[in-house]
Length: 171
Image 1: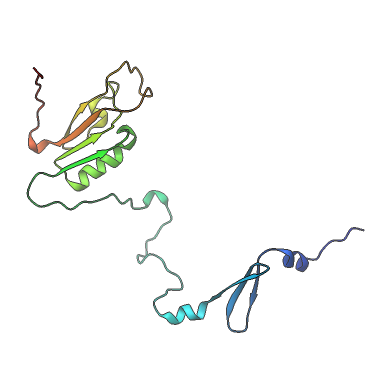
Image 2: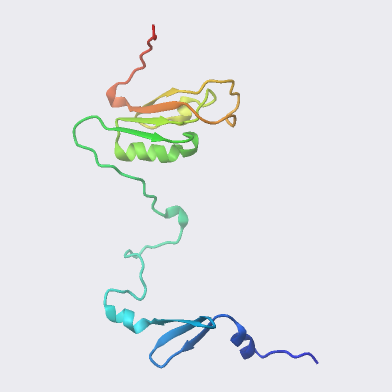
């Protein structure tokens, strides 16, 4: 008949053992030569530690879709033109974040480099409410959206500035 260890013998062979000391602390044996202790009473005596920290509101949920997303908000002077620039490294991939950044910060002109746009993207796909997009797409024989990356610039200009494109020649 083979030897079968008891439950207590199996527990004692594990790497982690919990035991209760006489002064109300929990001692954890991590290794044979190391012990960590955690004294709950000392933490409670500190005064500003809650035994069950959590949100202040009563209507808390664990639904990840309802989590608040925080976008950067920059402070601008009340007067003057508000400008912004970002190397977006693919505008279509970051379009929702760019829309939030532009609208929340109420910028007048938001310039972007490395938009990775080509002629397959329509302006209506990239539109932001109350802004006009001006773009200079990369050149090349790009027939699909997944071809070579890099290049191209664009700018969102607020419609209240009455923007218009001006063409000029270098000569």
